[in-house]
Image (cartoon, rainbow, N blue to C red; front, side, top):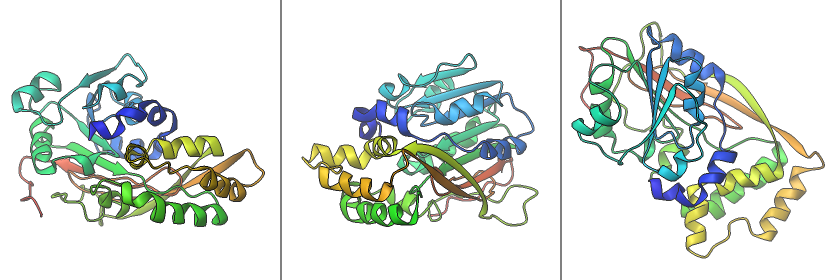
Amino acid sequence: MAKLFLKQAKQYADARPSYPPQLFQFIASKTPSHNLAWDVGTGSGQAAKSLAAIYKNVIATDASDKQLEFAAKLPNVRYQHTPSTMSTAELEQMVASKGTIDLVTIAQALHWFDRPTFYEQVKWVLKKPHGIIAAWCYYLPRVSDAFDTVFDQFYSTNVSPYWDPARKWVDDNYRSIDFPFEPVDGADHTGPFEFVTETMMDLDDFLTYIRSWSAYQTAKEKGVELLAEDVVEKFKLVWGEDAKKSCQVSNLFENWKNRGFLKTYANGCFYCVGDVTSTNFYEFIH
């Protein structure tokens, strides 16, 4: 997975969205203690930066040291390069001891993981009771009806052949991803619930975002330029006169025990969160 983003680490850092503050406020409300959070697959630290404003200490890990080079340096965030899979001894050495972490977050990365192994590691490091895991992904941005029509066609026709198979979990908004946990305490259903965020960007910003996709890199390696001149011209025509556009994010979230996922950026958020106890672990669902 780390290699998919190696060649566009700077574009990833420049163009990937920050996540809605409501997301972190909600997650933090489910962790009684705010001492230590672990952001897994942190990339260039988008989620870690927000966590650092709430949690006393944040451990932010990634299998790509190139991505970590572009992460914002903060006094209470420790960035750590880790292998894609870790033994229990490596987990304790590089991340934390057993039962010491309040929150584990996975932003736009859970679909890349060996999830059964990862979930066991999460259970090992999280506090019991009330340790939380929250994972999320974002899908396609929404700009305007005219732009969205052209962009969606570009995505389904030009881009789709170059995605890794794991992308299917994102395209499904994590609804069908294996996640063997229960709703958080205090919730009478699992959602989704909705809120809206937005960001201002010009077309160049938007194209940089596309260049940060792993599918864009894969296409380039196969000799295909997804943002060919004719494609960019189509985008310019429907972008319109305004230099900057408001990209709206209609965010849907769900609440789960030991579970979380978020869809965000310019059209929506899907996330779930979950409470870890010593007695409520379910068997893995396949």
